[in-house]
Each structure stands twice: as C-alpha cells, then as structure tokens.
Image (cartoon, rainbow over all chains, first blue to last red; front, side):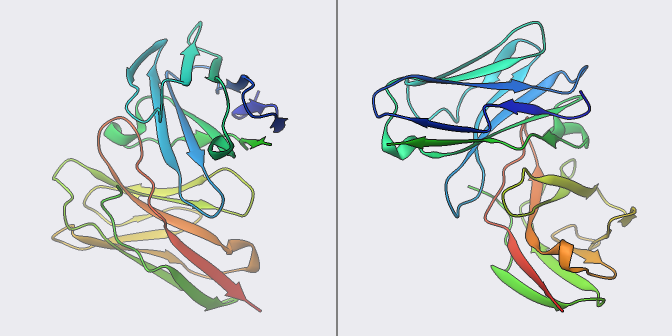
Length: 117
Length: 108
C-alpha cells in the first residue's frame, strides 16, 4: 500500500485479556517503530526494529508487552493481561533507515485506539 | 525525556505567518532537528528537518541559529488546517523522541 497501515483501528477489550495489534509498514522500509500515546499526552517510544531484529526494546513498559517483526515487513505488538492503564493509541511508523540518525522522514500509521474496560 | 523546549501553545491568525520556536541547547554536532505535526486524531506527519543550514520545502521553512541551539519553524501563510500540535525533535539514536510539542491554533 501507499502508507503505513495499522489494524484494528479500534479495539475494546476486557481487563486481563491479551490483545494483538498489527502494523504493515511501507514496503522496503527497514526501520519500524512502535509508540504509545495516552489521551492528551505526547508520544512515548516503545520499541524499534531494524529488519527483523529489535536492537532497542528500552521503551516497553513491562514484560506484558512484546513485539515481533517477520519478513522485514509486518510487525505485531502483543499486550498480555491488559490493564486499564494500557488504554491508549498505539502508533506504528516506518522509515527507509533509522530516522533519528541519518535525517530521513518517518511515516506514521493512523494508530490503533485500545480501550481496556 | 525530550531534550527540546517548546511553548505549550500559540495562536495565529489565518493567512499570517506562524513562527514556532524551539530550544535544543544540548544538540550535538551530528544530530538533526526534525519537525513533525499531529492533527487531531491522526498519526504524526513529517514536516521538515535540518542539520546546519536553513531549509525550505512546500510545507514550511526551518531557520536554525548559527550555534544550533535553537530553531524556528515558519508556516508562511497559516490556514485553519494547520491547527495541530507541532513537535520539535533532536534526532539521536534510532528513534525520534517526541516531547509535548506546541499546540498551534489558527483562527479565522
């Protein structure tokens, strides 16, 4: 597709359930990022992938959060045993190369709005 | 935490230039300055980036001071659709570290 695609766009889940959020980056983009944005707040970095490897997982808030990327393409962010504080918009972005280092733009998806009830 | 400092909010009249300042006093020599914006309920959108020289594209101009400790994003003729949160970011490491940004309101 032309841009970064995320699914679902909205997800309501019960506390304690597991959820999977999907990101389809722009074809050929080697770098992929996940961010979290709570209501009225800025973007919080979660994890970065270079190819299928995740050299920086420093932003994952707890061991309930995990992410993987396959085929240098699709990425899945999994949240186990969801809690109410996990409610947020989860944003995915991709870039040709790591955007912080070499001055290229990152393209963002529209996000998945997760509500834990 | 973000290493840049921006005003929390600004207003601008439609058709006028919007000048958004940013302080990045800890920026190192090889770090870029990036500007993104986020319109309500959408993902962030890239605007422009620069290293040392001033930059211009179809969306905006970026003026970077000679000591690189601050910059200004200029939207030359603001429209109502430019109402958004504008983020100034020091590019370091792998990922962009977004702060709270400046909420720009363009008024008729």
